Length: 297
Ligand code: GDP
Image 1 (cartoon, rainbow, N blue to C red):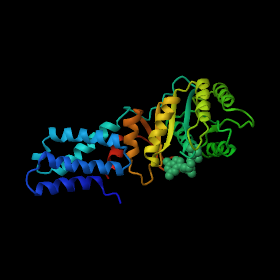
Image 2 (image 1 turned 90 degrees about the horizontal axis):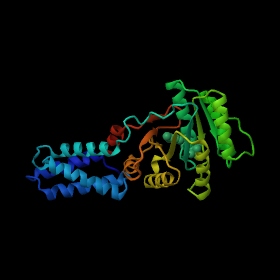
Image 3 (image 1 turned 90 degrees about the vertical axis):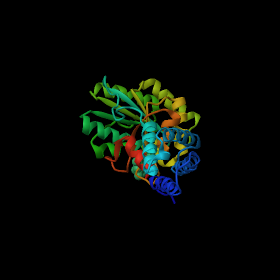
Image 4 (image 1 turned 60 degrees about the horizontal axis):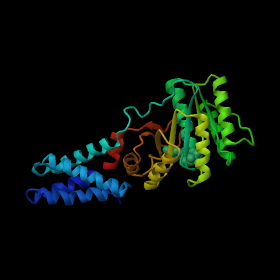
Protein backbone atom coordinates (compact mmCIF):
# COMPACT_ATOMS: atom_id res chain seq x y z
CA UNK A 1 0.00 0.00 0.00
CA UNK A 2 1.08 3.52 -0.69
CA UNK A 3 2.02 5.40 2.42
CA UNK A 4 1.37 9.10 2.48
CA UNK A 5 4.52 10.73 1.11
CA UNK A 6 4.50 13.75 3.43
CA UNK A 7 4.12 11.55 6.50
CA UNK A 8 6.79 9.27 5.24
CA UNK A 9 9.19 12.15 4.64
CA UNK A 10 8.63 13.88 7.94
CA UNK A 11 8.75 10.50 9.64
CA UNK A 12 12.14 9.66 8.19
CA UNK A 13 13.69 13.04 8.85
CA UNK A 14 12.27 13.46 12.32
CA UNK A 15 13.41 9.99 13.27
CA UNK A 16 16.90 10.89 12.13
CA UNK A 17 17.06 14.03 14.29
CA UNK A 18 16.16 12.06 17.37
CA UNK A 19 19.47 10.31 16.94
CA UNK A 20 21.38 13.60 17.11
CA UNK A 21 22.52 15.96 14.40
CA UNK A 22 21.72 15.08 10.79
CA UNK A 23 24.60 14.29 8.51
CA UNK A 24 24.49 14.75 4.74
CA UNK A 25 24.58 11.00 4.52
CA UNK A 26 21.35 10.88 6.55
CA UNK A 27 19.73 13.28 4.12
CA UNK A 28 20.84 11.14 1.22
CA UNK A 29 19.35 8.04 2.77
CA UNK A 30 16.10 9.81 3.42
CA UNK A 31 15.98 11.13 -0.11
CA UNK A 32 16.16 7.58 -1.33
CA UNK A 33 12.76 7.26 0.33
CA UNK A 34 11.54 10.19 -1.72
CA UNK A 35 12.65 8.42 -4.87
CA UNK A 36 10.89 5.20 -3.95
CA UNK A 37 7.75 7.10 -3.06
CA UNK A 38 7.82 8.95 -6.39
CA UNK A 39 8.22 5.69 -8.27
CA UNK A 40 5.26 4.31 -6.39
CA UNK A 41 3.35 7.40 -7.44
CA UNK A 42 4.05 6.41 -11.06
CA UNK A 43 6.80 8.89 -11.77
CA UNK A 44 9.31 7.53 -14.25
CA UNK A 45 12.79 6.63 -12.97
CA UNK A 46 14.85 9.32 -14.75
CA UNK A 47 12.36 11.99 -13.71
CA UNK A 48 12.36 10.75 -10.12
CA UNK A 49 16.17 10.73 -10.09
CA UNK A 50 16.48 14.27 -11.42
CA UNK A 51 13.85 15.42 -9.06
CA UNK A 52 15.58 13.95 -6.03
CA UNK A 53 18.79 15.61 -7.10
CA UNK A 54 17.07 18.97 -7.18
CA UNK A 55 15.54 18.40 -3.79
CA UNK A 56 18.88 17.37 -2.39
CA UNK A 57 20.52 20.55 -3.63
CA UNK A 58 17.72 22.66 -2.22
CA UNK A 59 17.82 20.80 1.08
CA UNK A 60 21.56 21.27 1.41
CA UNK A 61 21.29 24.95 0.50
CA UNK A 62 18.62 25.53 3.10
CA UNK A 63 20.57 23.81 5.87
CA UNK A 64 17.89 21.25 6.59
CA UNK A 65 20.44 19.41 8.67
CA UNK A 66 20.44 22.21 11.25
CA UNK A 67 16.71 22.66 11.36
CA UNK A 68 14.71 21.61 14.39
CA UNK A 69 11.89 20.34 12.18
CA UNK A 70 13.80 18.88 9.24
CA UNK A 71 10.85 16.69 8.23
CA UNK A 72 8.51 19.60 7.66
CA UNK A 73 11.19 21.56 5.93
CA UNK A 74 11.91 18.75 3.50
CA UNK A 75 8.21 18.28 2.79
CA UNK A 76 8.03 21.96 1.88
CA UNK A 77 11.10 21.71 -0.34
CA UNK A 78 9.64 18.68 -2.11
CA UNK A 79 6.30 20.44 -2.49
CA UNK A 80 7.88 23.54 -3.99
CA UNK A 81 10.01 21.47 -6.36
CA UNK A 82 6.91 19.56 -7.49
CA UNK A 83 4.98 22.75 -8.19
CA UNK A 84 7.95 24.19 -10.00
CA UNK A 85 8.29 21.11 -12.24
CA UNK A 86 4.56 20.94 -12.92
CA UNK A 87 4.04 24.60 -13.73
CA UNK A 88 3.63 25.20 -17.44
CA UNK A 89 1.34 27.88 -18.79
CA UNK A 90 0.33 30.78 -16.62
CA UNK A 91 -3.25 30.15 -17.69
CA UNK A 92 -3.58 26.54 -18.87
CA UNK A 93 -7.35 26.77 -19.33
CA UNK A 94 -7.21 29.62 -21.84
CA UNK A 95 -7.78 28.03 -25.24
CA UNK A 96 -6.69 29.94 -28.33
CA UNK A 97 -10.02 30.47 -29.96
CA UNK A 98 -9.75 33.92 -31.43
CA UNK A 99 -10.59 34.41 -35.15
CA UNK A 100 -13.75 32.31 -35.43
CA UNK A 101 -14.41 29.61 -36.34
CA UNK A 102 -11.39 28.34 -34.39
CA UNK A 103 -10.61 24.66 -34.92
CA UNK A 104 -9.62 22.48 -31.97
CA UNK A 105 -8.23 19.06 -32.80
CA UNK A 106 -8.71 16.32 -30.22
CA UNK A 107 -6.36 13.34 -30.42
CA UNK A 108 -5.63 10.30 -28.29
CA UNK A 109 -6.00 6.56 -27.94
CA UNK A 110 -9.31 4.80 -27.85
CA UNK A 111 -10.70 4.64 -24.34
CA UNK A 112 -8.62 7.57 -23.08
CA UNK A 113 -11.76 9.65 -22.67
CA UNK A 114 -11.37 11.69 -25.84
CA UNK A 115 -15.02 11.90 -26.84
CA UNK A 116 -16.12 12.63 -23.28
CA UNK A 117 -13.45 15.33 -22.98
CA UNK A 118 -14.46 16.90 -26.31
CA UNK A 119 -18.01 17.28 -25.02
CA UNK A 120 -16.87 18.50 -21.59
CA UNK A 121 -14.71 21.21 -23.16
CA UNK A 122 -17.47 22.20 -25.58
CA UNK A 123 -19.85 22.60 -22.66
CA UNK A 124 -17.29 24.61 -20.74
CA UNK A 125 -16.75 26.98 -23.68
CA UNK A 126 -20.49 27.40 -24.07
CA UNK A 127 -21.30 27.86 -20.39
CA UNK A 128 -18.33 29.94 -19.28
CA UNK A 129 -17.46 31.92 -22.36
CA UNK A 130 -20.77 31.94 -24.18
CA UNK A 131 -19.18 30.42 -27.27
CA UNK A 132 -21.11 28.74 -30.05
CA UNK A 133 -19.45 25.39 -30.53
CA UNK A 134 -19.82 22.74 -33.23
CA UNK A 135 -18.51 19.25 -32.58
CA UNK A 136 -17.71 16.67 -35.25
CA UNK A 137 -16.69 13.05 -34.85
CA UNK A 138 -14.16 11.78 -37.37
CA UNK A 139 -14.15 8.23 -36.05
CA UNK A 140 -15.39 6.59 -39.22
CA UNK A 141 -14.24 3.15 -38.04
CA UNK A 142 -16.57 3.23 -35.10
CA UNK A 143 -20.10 4.40 -35.86
CA UNK A 144 -20.90 3.98 -32.15
CA UNK A 145 -18.32 6.66 -31.31
CA UNK A 146 -19.96 9.06 -33.77
CA UNK A 147 -23.33 8.34 -32.22
CA UNK A 148 -21.88 8.84 -28.75
CA UNK A 149 -20.74 12.38 -29.58
CA UNK A 150 -24.16 13.20 -31.04
CA UNK A 151 -25.86 11.93 -27.87
CA UNK A 152 -23.53 13.94 -25.63
CA UNK A 153 -24.15 17.00 -27.84
CA UNK A 154 -27.89 16.72 -27.31
CA UNK A 155 -27.34 16.27 -23.58
CA UNK A 156 -25.25 19.41 -23.18
CA UNK A 157 -26.97 21.53 -25.81
CA UNK A 158 -24.05 21.71 -28.24
CA UNK A 159 -24.53 21.11 -31.97
CA UNK A 160 -22.84 18.21 -33.71
CA UNK A 161 -22.13 17.94 -37.40
CA UNK A 162 -24.73 15.62 -38.99
CA UNK A 163 -23.30 12.17 -39.65
CA UNK A 164 -22.98 11.27 -43.33
CA UNK A 165 -22.23 7.60 -43.90
CA UNK A 166 -19.24 6.71 -46.06
CA UNK A 167 -17.33 9.95 -45.65
CA UNK A 168 -13.64 9.86 -44.78
CA UNK A 169 -12.19 11.90 -41.87
CA UNK A 170 -10.63 14.59 -44.06
CA UNK A 171 -13.93 15.16 -45.86
CA UNK A 172 -15.72 15.39 -42.53
CA UNK A 173 -13.16 17.90 -41.28
CA UNK A 174 -13.69 20.03 -44.39
CA UNK A 175 -17.44 19.85 -43.97
CA UNK A 176 -17.10 20.84 -40.30
CA UNK A 177 -15.06 23.87 -41.30
CA UNK A 178 -17.61 24.97 -43.92
CA UNK A 179 -20.52 24.38 -41.58
CA UNK A 180 -18.77 26.26 -38.77
CA UNK A 181 -18.15 29.26 -41.05
CA UNK A 182 -21.61 29.31 -42.55
CA UNK A 183 -23.31 28.67 -39.24
CA UNK A 184 -21.46 31.45 -37.40
CA UNK A 185 -19.81 29.18 -34.85
CA UNK A 186 -16.96 30.45 -32.70
CA UNK A 187 -15.25 27.09 -32.35
CA UNK A 188 -15.37 23.72 -34.03
CA UNK A 189 -13.98 20.65 -32.35
CA UNK A 190 -12.74 17.67 -34.30
CA UNK A 191 -12.88 14.41 -32.36
CA UNK A 192 -10.45 12.21 -34.29
CA UNK A 193 -10.49 8.42 -34.38
CA UNK A 194 -8.82 6.60 -31.54
CA UNK A 195 -7.22 3.19 -31.59
CA UNK A 196 -5.95 0.90 -28.91
CA UNK A 197 -2.35 1.55 -29.93
CA UNK A 198 -0.58 4.16 -31.91
CA UNK A 199 -0.17 2.89 -35.46
CA UNK A 200 0.77 4.36 -38.79
CA UNK A 201 -2.79 4.69 -39.98
CA UNK A 202 -3.90 6.54 -36.87
CA UNK A 203 -1.03 8.99 -37.16
CA UNK A 204 -1.46 9.44 -40.91
CA UNK A 205 -5.13 10.16 -40.47
CA UNK A 206 -4.63 12.63 -37.64
CA UNK A 207 -1.89 14.37 -39.62
CA UNK A 208 -4.11 14.64 -42.72
CA UNK A 209 -6.91 16.15 -40.65
CA UNK A 210 -4.47 18.53 -38.97
CA UNK A 211 -3.25 19.73 -42.36
CA UNK A 212 -6.78 20.44 -43.55
CA UNK A 213 -8.06 22.03 -40.35
CA UNK A 214 -4.94 23.94 -39.30
CA UNK A 215 -6.02 23.75 -35.65
CA UNK A 216 -5.47 26.56 -33.16
CA UNK A 217 -5.16 23.94 -30.46
CA UNK A 218 -4.31 20.25 -30.68
CA UNK A 219 -5.18 18.63 -27.38
CA UNK A 220 -3.98 15.17 -26.54
CA UNK A 221 -6.25 13.23 -24.22
CA UNK A 222 -4.49 10.60 -22.10
CA UNK A 223 -5.62 8.33 -19.32
CA UNK A 224 -3.93 9.62 -16.15
CA UNK A 225 -4.08 6.16 -14.62
CA UNK A 226 -1.77 4.64 -17.20
CA UNK A 227 1.33 6.21 -15.69
CA UNK A 228 4.41 5.80 -17.80
CA UNK A 229 2.38 4.62 -20.81
CA UNK A 230 0.63 7.97 -20.86
CA UNK A 231 3.99 9.69 -21.15
CA UNK A 232 5.11 7.41 -24.01
CA UNK A 233 1.87 8.05 -25.86
CA UNK A 234 2.29 11.79 -25.40
CA UNK A 235 5.86 11.74 -26.63
CA UNK A 236 4.86 9.89 -29.77
CA UNK A 237 1.81 12.00 -30.55
CA UNK A 238 3.80 15.16 -30.02
CA UNK A 239 6.60 13.97 -32.29
CA UNK A 240 4.26 12.94 -35.08
CA UNK A 241 1.35 15.35 -34.85
CA UNK A 242 2.51 18.17 -32.59
CA UNK A 243 0.29 18.92 -29.62
CA UNK A 244 -0.36 22.20 -27.84
CA UNK A 245 -1.43 20.63 -24.60
CA UNK A 246 -2.46 17.55 -22.70
CA UNK A 247 -5.67 16.62 -20.93
CA UNK A 248 -5.17 14.03 -18.20
CA UNK A 249 -8.34 12.05 -17.60
CA UNK A 250 -9.42 9.81 -14.74
CA UNK A 251 -7.67 11.93 -12.17
CA UNK A 252 -10.66 11.15 -9.96
CA UNK A 253 -9.31 7.61 -9.76
CA UNK A 254 -6.84 6.39 -7.20
CA UNK A 255 -3.73 7.12 -9.27
CA UNK A 256 -1.21 9.18 -7.41
CA UNK A 257 -0.76 11.84 -10.04
CA UNK A 258 2.81 10.87 -10.82
CA UNK A 259 1.98 10.70 -14.53
CA UNK A 260 1.48 14.45 -14.42
CA UNK A 261 5.00 15.02 -13.17
CA UNK A 262 6.59 12.74 -15.75
CA UNK A 263 4.41 14.18 -18.49
CA UNK A 264 5.57 17.69 -17.88
CA UNK A 265 9.20 16.74 -17.34
CA UNK A 266 9.51 14.37 -20.32
CA UNK A 267 7.35 15.94 -23.03
CA UNK A 268 7.69 19.57 -21.97
CA UNK A 269 4.05 20.01 -22.96
CA UNK A 270 1.70 21.77 -20.61
CA UNK A 271 -1.12 19.87 -18.97
CA UNK A 272 -4.11 22.08 -19.64
CA UNK A 273 -7.03 20.24 -18.07
CA UNK A 274 -7.74 17.27 -15.86
CA UNK A 275 -10.77 15.01 -16.13
CA UNK A 276 -12.36 14.20 -12.79
CA UNK A 277 -15.25 11.90 -13.60
CA UNK A 278 -17.77 10.81 -16.18
CA UNK A 279 -20.15 13.73 -15.78
CA UNK A 280 -20.06 16.60 -18.26
CA UNK A 281 -18.94 19.11 -15.63
CA UNK A 282 -16.16 16.88 -14.31
CA UNK A 283 -13.27 18.80 -15.83
CA UNK A 284 -10.98 21.43 -14.33
CA UNK A 285 -8.03 23.47 -15.46
CA UNK A 286 -4.73 22.01 -14.39
CA UNK A 287 -3.55 23.27 -11.00
CA UNK A 288 0.08 22.40 -10.17
CA UNK A 289 -0.57 22.99 -6.45
CA UNK A 290 -3.36 20.48 -6.37
CA UNK A 291 -1.42 17.74 -8.15
CA UNK A 292 1.64 18.41 -5.98
CA UNK A 293 -0.56 18.00 -2.92
CA UNK A 294 -1.88 14.79 -4.36
CA UNK A 295 1.55 13.34 -5.05
CA UNK A 296 2.62 14.29 -1.54
CA UNK A 297 -0.61 12.83 -0.17
P1 GDP B 1 -12.62 7.58 -26.13
O1 GDP B 1 -12.64 6.19 -26.70
O2 GDP B 1 -11.23 8.06 -25.91
O3 GDP B 1 -13.43 8.57 -26.88
O4 GDP B 1 -13.21 7.45 -24.65
P2 GDP B 1 -14.63 7.88 -24.09
O5 GDP B 1 -14.77 9.35 -24.09
O6 GDP B 1 -15.69 7.09 -24.76
O7 GDP B 1 -14.46 7.43 -22.56
C1 GDP B 1 -14.31 6.09 -22.17
C2 GDP B 1 -14.91 5.92 -20.78
O8 GDP B 1 -14.16 6.66 -19.83
C3 GDP B 1 -16.33 6.43 -20.67
O9 GDP B 1 -17.07 5.53 -19.90
C4 GDP B 1 -16.19 7.77 -19.96
O10 GDP B 1 -17.32 8.11 -19.23
C5 GDP B 1 -15.00 7.50 -19.07
N1 GDP B 1 -14.27 8.72 -18.71
C6 GDP B 1 -13.80 9.70 -19.52
N2 GDP B 1 -13.14 10.65 -18.82
C7 GDP B 1 -13.19 10.27 -17.51
C8 GDP B 1 -12.67 10.82 -16.29
O11 GDP B 1 -12.02 11.89 -16.23
N3 GDP B 1 -12.92 10.10 -15.16
C9 GDP B 1 -13.62 8.92 -15.16
N4 GDP B 1 -13.80 8.30 -14.03
N5 GDP B 1 -14.09 8.38 -16.29
C10 GDP B 1 -13.90 9.03 -17.45
